[in-house]
Structure formats: C-alpha cells, structure tokens
Length: 293
Image (cartoon, rainbow, N blue to C red; front, top):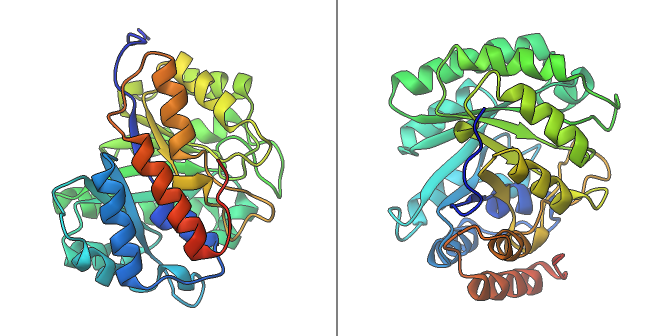
C-alpha cells in the first residue's frame, strides 16, 4: 500500500476527558469535565473523546456524560465522540445527539470478560448490531480492537485474531477502524507487522492507533506507526490514562509530547502545545498529582 508523504497532517484525538480521567481516584463534576473539554478545543485539538456511557457503579468518573455534552460551550470546535460498550450506551449517545461513537471489542477473552462481561464472540456480535444501528442513524463510528498488541492476562495476541475482528467490522462500514494497545505491551516491530496486515483489510487513511506507555515504548510505537503510514492517533493531555481492568496499565502517550515529536519530524498538527501544557499543569493540580510529560 502506498505511503503518504511525511510532510502532511497528523490528526490527534484527545482522550484525556475519558481515558485520562477514568483512571483517577478524584471524580470531577460534569461542569469541570466540560470546562476541560472546552479548553482542549481552544488549544486546537481537532477531535475530543468527551467520555463514555458506562455504568457509573463500575466507572464513577464517567457519570453524567450526557450533562457534560450539554455543558460544552462550543460544540462546533471539534469532532466530539463517546465510547459506548452496549446498546443502552449507544441509545444514550443517539438521544443526546452526539455525532460520533467508538465501539471496541477486545482480542483477549480474559480482558473481554473483565471489561464487558462477554466473550469475544458475543461482544463482536453485539458490536456489529450497534455499528449497524449507529450508521443507520447517521452517527459516525470508530470500530476498534482492544488488546490488539498483547494482553496483561493472556500475553501475546495473534495478528490473525486481530485481523478477523477488523474484517468483521469492515462489513458494517464504520467510518474508522482502531487498533488499541490497551495494556501498553506493543513493540515497534509488532506495530509494523500488525499495521502491515491491517493495510490488507482497511485503507490506512481510516486507521487510528491508541497507545499506552506502560513499558516506556509509547513514542517509539508512535514513530513505527507513522513510518507505516498511520496518521491518526489517540493522545491524552499530561499523559493521563490507564484501564481500570488492566492492572499496571499506565497513561496514554501525552498530547504535548506527541505534538512536539511529530512536528519535529515535519508533520503538522495545528495544536498549540503551550496551551496544552498549561492545561496539563492545571489538571495535575486539580487531581493532586503531576501528569507525566
């Protein structure tokens, strides 16, 4: 597959308001979360994942995502999305008028059971129903694979299993396809092999990669993905993040470090790193910690 020029735009999605906050012990109010989202949009982040529709009993940090959506001041400043795990969550997103949803299935049986209470096969079946429902309602969809590069519980995950999930997603015509290194176990060589295989299933212009820095290889994996032609990534302000169902999984690659790295390589992001660093500092103070840089 032809690679794009190195001197083009890298499109970042800020996931701090969801992936970043869901791993913090302090629960921010919907108003605080909406203010964070507005500040990130003001910093030029073109895509922002504002939260998720999940059980507040399991993830109390995400309670009131509908209220967060309604309190965002400028909804035209970015493409906003939410993560949904089941049909109820999707219906909530549709009812709120949120324009884009993200639907992920784990490639790991153990992680799937812990994360959604379903086997991979059942989770995939439900996901396809949700994707079809969202598409029929004119809602944009990113369909993706969690633990695409390894699982904390099971270790290595075969590329063949990941490709089977991607192939199943593509039949439902989502706008984008995602690969998530949920446990942060991926390596640059593994990134390249998996993305090369993904390129046989989906055009890489539709592929987004979600990276964690558990083993300190997040930015190296970013560079490997860029070399393969990927131009869409999830990042988190201050490097916040983690997965409540993956012990030891640390934050996402930080938004500010990603912007600085890719722009030093000749890419454009249109993100103001000065503003993002200020947001990271203020958020760290609010949370009582210093986000990773």
